[in-house]
Length: 95
Length: 119
Image (cartoon, rainbow over the protein chains, first blue to last red):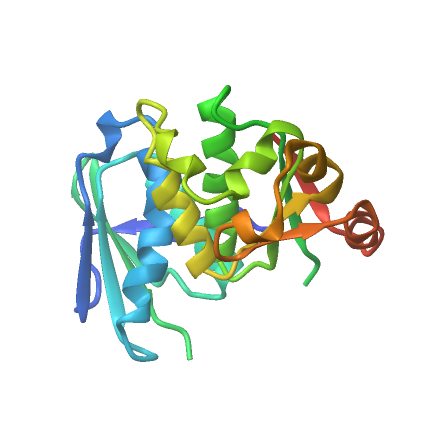
């Protein structure tokens, strides 16, 4: 079982929708509890191939999203860094 | 794909365990995993209408929200028949997505290789 996550770059692809989950670092359970179900709900609004950009500021989110993508069959194609604690994760909706 | 069986034995007397079971179950369901939330002992009350509204552990999302999301993502809720009967709980009292299931139903899923996690 691979646990590697996409490397963090300086930029990502253009996105078709944005999900902001900022400020979650102050709520202990929020990222773990809410982030990936929220991604699932947002992806339902997209067509196959459209890219969802997820903005997060919790250090656990990168690995959380990578793991969820492997489970759900989505690909985390890129991760970019806005600031040291704010990431953008790019997920195309699977066919 | 084998099933995941998340087992919860707690209700209002332990809001953190009750909520966490559904958080993990909801993450699994949202990742398209086949997941059953097995409720036993005091946990069977979670399958009844209105009971979860009173459960909101500080720092956690309200249990009702997580529970509704779990069901809408395709998760199944099984209330242990051995535990519902002495508590007077019947099918008519259950929330949408919940069913009373027997020990044999549970053993069958386990024998088929379900992975389990207990709360």
